[in-house]
Every structure is written in structure tokens, then in C-alpha cells.
Length: 313
Image (cartoon, rainbow, N blue to C red; front, side, top):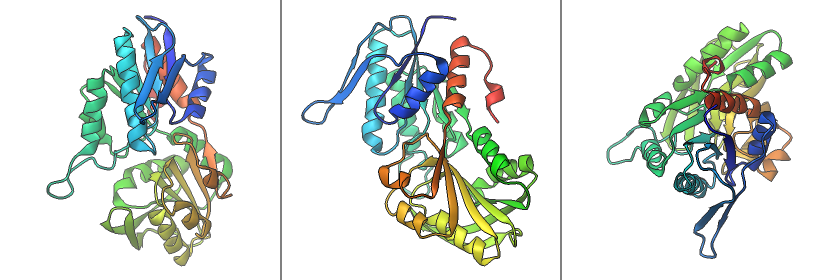
């Protein structure tokens, strides 16, 4: 091992950071991450990190800009404290949906965020279920891209047996859904969706047979839940026996919780890359799975400089 391992966290998801630290049997590093009276972020590292291998666990989830700035300022503080290597562990990568120009005169914000993280001083990035795989190429530093698939697959295998159909909510998620369907020996269906504006989509048609089957909608994130709930209703209308949903990142903004409560979805299964809000925890329709062991194992192998390819399921 080249230097001692140190774990730090901002304020975006301290519960996940504590779980990862528990898996690695390490304490979280001492750091104050707060604000001045005018709202500016204040960071002070409370222990020696000179020559150490440092990992900062920070999702850039809502409030996105605040959590992103916490990450950038922590990276800068650790760089100036002479950390040997700084790895940004970003379970949820904000701005990931702005990964290309969909119309003239719009930014590619996912690339801008990648530049900010790199220029701040990160030496590598560990992320999970990026909205678009090409975001890895936006960085000029190594990126390890994990998937929550092992955790979600184990849940599905333990709770559902036969007569399954894995449903992609749009054309972009077909590759992910096909991989799940193959591993589960399940059928595959695709929702033909038209999107007229951001956070506004209309499910139009279904490609595949869902009649009398248990449908599991698979996606990388659930934001306003409009696509998810509408797709679920279409599946039921086409004869699906029951509808469940599995998503890695539970953004759940705006009317998402109310939509889920009033939908035909029996249960939404998510991971803890983003902490659930109070109303989401009380909704009764959401179950949270932990990805701490997956991230913890990746951190361990990065530190030991051993292969983590077996984690890329």
C-alpha cells in the first residue's frame, strides 16, 4: 500500500459515507464542512493528510450546486494539505443529463462539471450508474464507473421468481434492461416514449408482450416520476399483472412522491446513492438498498491498486 487511506465526506450523504467507512473498518476523517454567515462554504481539514491516499465521498444531489461546491472546495483543501492522491467518490453525478447539445446554444454541463472537478485537483473519480457512459470521456483523469446492477439483481432474484418482464422506459435504457433480462432469464419490453420538454414525457406504445406478467421498470434515476408512473399505467392497461420499478438514483423532485402514491406501481426500489427525504421515507412505496459494500470494495481495491473489473457487472 502506498500511503495510508483516509475517508472524508461532505454534507450530501453522510449516512452512506458512514456505511462505507464501516465496511472498510475505518473512521471518517476529521473535517469541518459548513458555511460562513453569508452562505459561502467553509472547509477545514482537521487532521494530517500529507502523503495520504484520500477519498472524498460526496453525491452532487439536491441542492446540487451547494453539494458540488462542497466537493470542489474539499478537493482544493486536501490538495493544498499535500494529500498524495485525491479520489472523488461521486455516487450520484449531478448535471449528468446535460451530456450533449440537444438544440443550438445550450451548454454541455456534464463536461463543465468534469472540468471543474479535474481542475480543482482530483486525481481520479469513482462514480456509479452515470446517466450516459460517455461522461467518462469528459474527464482527463481515470474514471471507475460502477453499476448498481449486482445489488438490484440480487433483490429481484430474491423477491420475484417466474413470469417476469424487464421494461425499459425509453430507447436509451434498452441496453441496461436487456442485460438484466438476460441475467434473470426474463422477457424484455420497451416503452416508446415521446419527450416534448424537460421533465415532461408521454408514454405512447409498448414493444413486447407484458400480458399477465410481473413488469419491472428499470432506469438509472427517477426524478419527477412522470415517465415512471405513466409507463406503469400503460403496462397495466396492456394487461400486466403487477408493476414494480428499480432505479439507482432516487432524485424524487417536485411532484414525484405524490405521483408515486397515486400510481399503480406496487413498489419502487432504489439505492442510497441519494438520501431519501422525509416524505419519501414515509410514503410506504419505496424500499432502499445499500451500495456501501460495492463502493467500499472499489475504494479498497483502488487504494491497493488491484483490479476492480470484477465489480463492473
